[in-house]
Length: 327
Image (cartoon, rainbow, N blue to C red; front, side, top):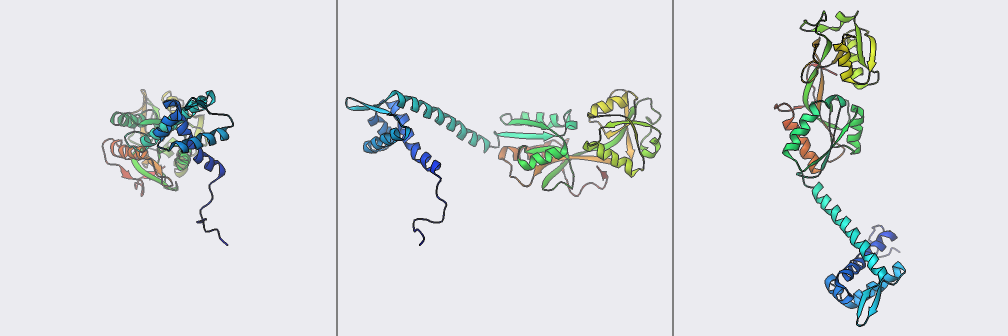
C-alpha cells in the first residue's frame, strides 16, 4: 500500500535535511555570541527559551563538543561555541554577498556581460562598441574573449560568453544574428603596384602574381580560398602566417598581394586596397544563442549594441543575407 504521507515527490537527501535542521540552530548560536547569553538570544531569534535550550543541546550533540556552559543563572557560549559562531558569521557574510550579487545580476543596469569577438575585429570595431557602452552603462562589468568564429559559437551555446561580434553565417544552427556591417574583400598591394590605380580587379588578372595570406585552416583563409576557387585561380603563396595585420604588412612591403576584407579605417600607409570583382563581402553581426536566455544585463547590452554600433544606421536582419555574394 502506498504511504499516504508520500505525495510522489522525492525524499530530501540526508545532507540537505541535516543542513535545513542546522540553519536555525546556527542562527541562534550567532545571536548568543552577539547578545551574551541564551535568554537574550532566544528573544532576538524569536523562539521560546525552552526551544532555544533544546536547539543548543541538539547542536552540541551534532558538533560533538559542548557549545554552552552555565554561568550562574545564565547560559553562555564556551570557547568552542564562540569559534563556531565566528565561522557561521563568516558564512553568513558570504551568503549575503551572494544574495547581493544575485540582485545585481538581475538588474540590467549592473551585472556582468561576457563579450566575444573575432581577433580581426579587436583593433577598432569591438573597442568602439565597448567604449560607447561603457560610457552609457558604467556599472556593468565587461569581460572580453577573443576567438575564432567556431569557438565563439560553441561558447555562446555553452553559456561561457553572452554575445559575440563575428561573421554572420546562415549555416550556424540556433544562432540569433543581427547584421551590423559588411566588409568588401579587396586586394592589398603597394601603392606603386601595376594594379594599384584600378577601380577593381578580377582575380584571373592576378594569375602570375605572388600572394601572402593566412595559414590554411583559419576561417578567413577558407573564405579567400573559395574566392579563388570561384575564379578558377590557384594562388601561389610565398608566405603564410597566423595574423591578418602581418599579412597586410607583407603585402604593403611588396612581398606579394593579399586578398582580405577591407581594413576598417583605411589601408595601411604605403598600401592600396582595390576591390575584388565581382564584389564579395564578409558580413559581421551580433550573435547570441537561441538555446539560452540571456541575463538582463547581457540582453540589454545586445540590444544597445544592435542600435548604436552600426555607425548610426539601423541594423539589418541577418537572414536572408544581402543579394551580394557573401563569405
